[in-house]
Length: 306
Image (cartoon, rainbow, N blue to C red; front, side):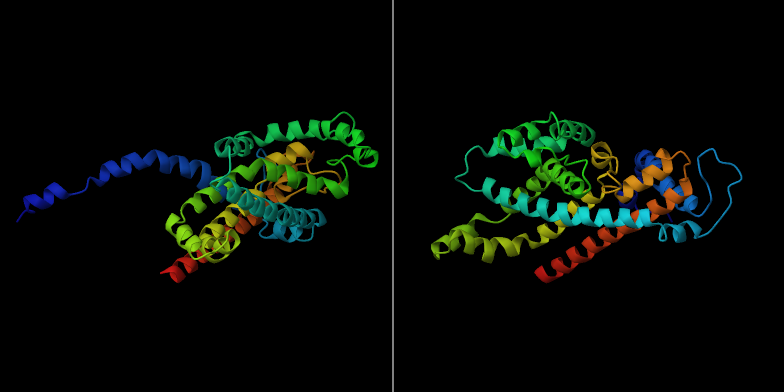
């Protein structure tokens, strides 16, 4: 006995769905899944270059060597210190600017939002080159201004070429570039707060600080978690800017994990592709843990709000 005519009409054409998904699945497999799998496999071998022959399996030898390598441990430390410098600065500063630009009496909101977002649209390499010229210790605008202010001792300091100042300076440049991204997130979050809550609080006599503390801040917590995780993930992927600004120098003061991987894989006179792949695998695991943490916190907050 055949199927009813009504069932035949409502049958979903799954074949067409798979056909339209095929290009995305193929490209995702070629440019995401395959590189990930290949990187993990390379990390378990002794491969030096892509043209190497007689590649053999060495197991976890590369990982053991990494955690005994002072330069790799230094790159982990540099990455951690960069996160501590850049993430809180971008997170807090973007929130304060969002509160200001979301204020009804603030003039020129559109202009300032555009100005803060323009650096986001500019490539990191271009920004790196521009700031190298701006911070030049001899002819840079910053140096000239400091000399006119009679701050000669500061003017003669190479902010990107001095061990103590290179990483903080790179963090400032990074915050300036990506501030607009977090600013847009915060503004969208603030605009999701119902206007009726503001009006009710003002009728009850609450001032701006009390409104933010008792009404706005509790509603922003789920958004804040997401913005914080996105900020951390952006700060980890600082390769383009750091490579252009300092190339990991001076004396490895700004060599993050990404720069360490690139140096061993491509810049070294004796490339160690397997060694760099092991470092990339560890870096990828750390990045996945951040995503898992964000999902867990978001789920927990959603359950509390129900």
